[in-house]
Length: 114
Image (cartoon, rainbow, N blue to C red; front, side, top):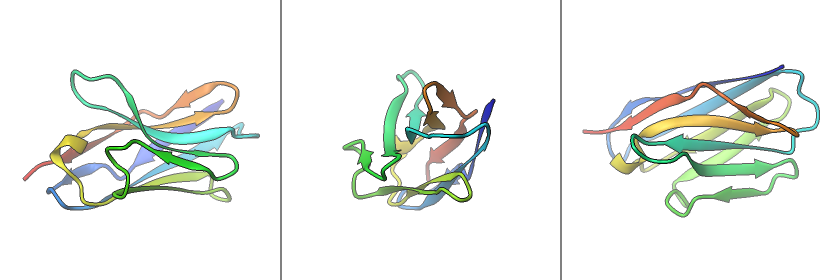
């Protein structure tokens, strides 16, 4: 059993910053990859940023240069630093872990609005 718990979402003005965290717990052995996805109302869930077990990162074009994914393996925690936020970043953000199976967190709401 694997649990992923996100935190750090909220309401922020355009141009502001937020840092999302995802704490993983349970039977975690060999993690293949972790990442952040988001889903805006009426849209499909999309990959925002990912990191492989070897530390290779990838980002959606829309967030490159603004978002940074990182992880603390000892704490089993994944982070997403989001800077220069835009209204179009508004969505529910989900933590994802792939370890042979796909695991998802419950999501955390990020709202960018003045």
